[in-house]
Amino acid sequence: MPIQFVISDVSAEFIMDVAKVLSHSPSPLSKEDITRSFEGRYGKTYVSLALSQCVQLGLVSQQKDLFVSSEKYRDLIKRSDRSQLYLPFRAVLQEFPPFLLYADFISKGYPSESAASMTRGILKIQKSGKIVEKALRLWGKHAQLIMIDPETGKLSIPEAEQGLPAEYVKNLVKALQDELKAGICIIETLSPQAYAYLTEKEIGITDLARALVNYEKDPKTSANNACQTFELFLYKFGQDVEVNVRDCKGVIELTDAIRGKDRILLNQVHICHGIGGLRNMTSHKPDRETGEVWIFTPQGALTSILAIPTMIRSLYLSWKEQKQEF
Image 1: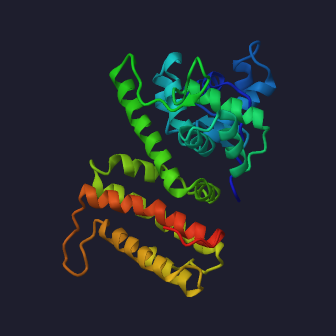
Image 2: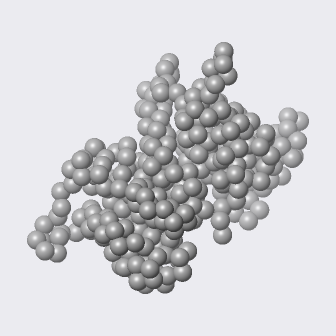
Image 3: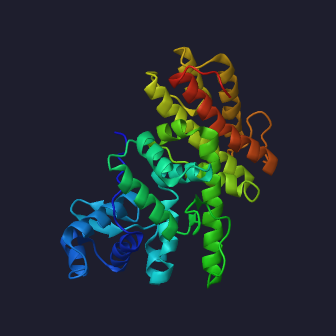
C-alpha cells in the first residue's frame, strides 16, 4: 500500500517537545499520558497532531494505542538540551520525502509556494497547499536547512553552519549537511517523478545519499549499498510490470525475467547486467573465476553509485513515458 504522507500545521518546536517526553519515558505512553504532559499549555487536538507528525517523521513509533521513542534517535534527543533539539529534527526532516522534494525545488530557484505545490501534487498530499507550504518552510528554517533572505524573502539551502557551541554538534551538522546535498543530487539524477515512484514503493534514497558521501572513505561498501538499492528497485519494478520475480536472485536474474516479458529494452539490459556485475564485485566473497576478492577504488565506487539513479530514471521513463533516455 502506498505511503500516505501527512503534513500538519504544528510547530517543529512542539514536535520535538513531544519527542523529548517520549525519549525520557521508561515505558510506552498513551495519547492521554502525553496530553497530560502538556496540560494547560496545549489542547488535545494540537498534541494529537504533533504526535502523529512524530510518527510520520520517524521520531516515535506506535504500538497499538501506545507510543515509544525511536531507538535510532532516542539517545540524541535525551542528551540534547532544548536549544539543540533542532539536530534530531534536522536528521529526520532531511530523510522525509516531502521535505527532500521541496528542498530540491527550492535549490532550483522555485519560490516556496511553487515548491510546496509541486511537492503536494507529486506525492499526493491531502492537506491544503497553505498548510503544506507553511509547515515545510518553517520546519526547514527551524532545522537550519533553509535560509530566508530578510530583504527579499527568498529561500535557499545554506552551505555552511557557523557558531555552533560543541564539537560533536559541528561534526553532526557537517555529516547531515553532506547527506542533504547528496540527497538533492540523487533526486536531480532520478527526476522528481522517479523519486516519487521510489517513495511510493517504500524504497528510500538514504543509502544512495550516504554512498555518495562516503565513496572515498569506504568505496566498496558504498558501491555495494547503492547496488542493493538498485536490486530492490528492480524487484518492485518487475512486480509493477507484471513479471513473476519472486524466485529471482540478484540483479542479472531480475533483469532477464523482466526482459523475457519485453518490459525492458536490450540496451537497458546490457547496462543492468553491468550493474549486476558491479553488485557481484562489491561482495566480500572471492571472485569465482580467480578466487580473489575485488578491490574497489573511489573512482570505481563513484561511477557505480551514479549509474544507479541514472538507470532507475531510464527504466522509469521508458515504462511510464515511452522515452529512450539515459
